[in-house]
Each structure stands twice: as C-alpha cells, then as structure tokens.
Image (tube, one colour):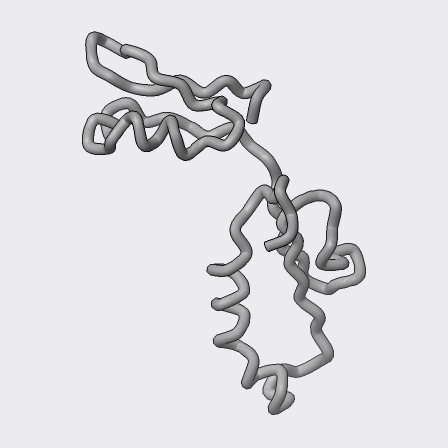
Length: 103
C-alpha cells in the first residue's frame, strides 16, 4: 500500500471482487459493468468513471467501553500512528478516548 492516509483497507473488498472474476471473464453478466475501489476521496481507483464505486471515507472510531475491558488497552493505544487513542478511565474501569481532531 503506497497511501498513508487511506480510509479503508482494500484487501478484503478486493478479495471479494476477485471471487466474482469468472462472471466478468466469461460474460455471464447481462451488460458491461465497471466496478472500482478507492480507499479515500483522492480517488486513485478512478471511481468517478465507474458504474459501481466503493469509496472509503474517514470517520472517527466509535468506542464500546463494555467490550474494551477484554482487550489490551496499551496495545490499542499503541496501534494508533497519530496518538489519537489515549488511555482513559471510564466508570472506574480502564478504557480509551479518541481525539477526533487527530484522526
């Protein structure tokens, strides 16, 4: 991956599209169809020229504090490259907070 600001991970979506390749190669679909994937609004995948476009958008992560206690909170914080995820105590339990302006 050459993009450092991507909004989605394309590998799962592209793998799903690869499973459909036989329909495109063997002309099993009724008409010409172009599907494209872009991981952000820069549109490297030329989604604006396609019949079906899959486009990732940036959105701040949502935190489910009830499930976070089953995860390793320091690892979750360390996984953020911009340090937008920080440790926080919620209801006396260890959790995290997300600084949306840093996402």
